[in-house]
Image (cartoon, rainbow, N blue to C red; front, side, top):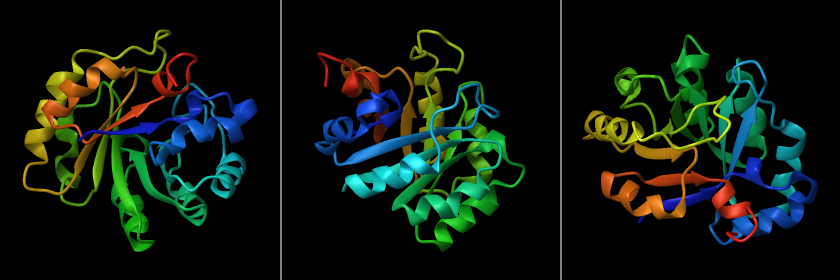
Length: 201
């Protein structure tokens, strides 16, 4: 069954202690860490991650949308973040980050921007634990799920065949999309507004 992972970046961060309780029924919480350089937005840094680690028993994963992902790995893992996805586009040497995450007994993911080709994952397919596929694009004011993603998921499924790597999707996903995503072979869906917005939580 497809796993829903709530993204805390879509919560009301002024009430984060209360908001994270909405995530606890799913047993996991997703941290989008953006530095305003690799991606156009700035979310939050290690200070908030440290506070979240103190108030939740949820499993935490991090999606690093930053220009220097390597420097975040050890601080995140000290805060009980056991799964970390780095962007393939953010570093010349993804293997450095993957190896460090595994050395610290974590799970390593490769994140792909919407426009990045699925087959760019091929050199790392046997090294990683999951692929985090961006299903929308930064700068889209509607943060909409892009239908092209369905073809990309099928490509990734073929590329990862014979490996243990999972497929995660992230961006504009609604509850009514989950069945189709599961049928395509998606293991986890990152969901923000569908979990935290009024009337849907």
